Image 1 (cartoon, rainbow, N blue to C red):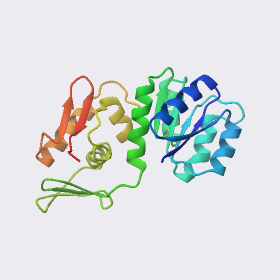
Image 2: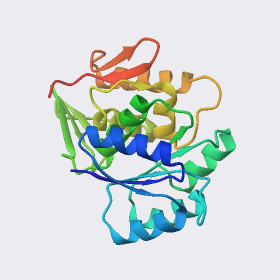
Image 3: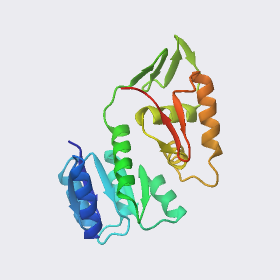
Image 4: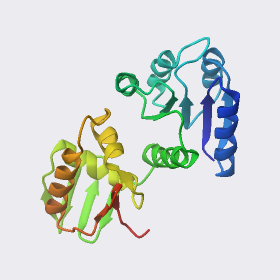
Length: 219
């Protein structure tokens, strides 16, 4: 069972999040301010931290820096929705950023997706005659190596770690480029188009109209 630490000073929000996550089978604890959050983080082993930025005691930005050396994934949940705040949080080490108010369903989806990416998984992915080694960052098709750019491989790895999940263009950009998307999302479309051509299977990465893309793989 995944253990999640919720660091949030608004009791209504933290209790809502804990209730929803508990129903999904997660084990959750709440810290009501930054200092308590830091102490609880040190005293336990956590798979994920959900973190507000505007906290009494120790700020969320300070906690991101404090948590970062442990490589524990962090999702920021904050009313600080300016692009500059998002960029700062992501560059400091947060893995995802959700603005308040938020839909609980979106939060659950992002928690699941992030835990899929960061949990221990098989590092070799096979689809028909394609083999992807996530450790060596190599891709072969029928035994012949396919050359991908760094971003193309990062995009492919993101799809693999979130297979069968529809991901919006903006979220894909944030996951691969590690910063909020600025303007249109044609960069994502161009990279997906190039990746499809190199892999040779259009049906592997499906377009989800009005949302983004999904890698369709039958488990």
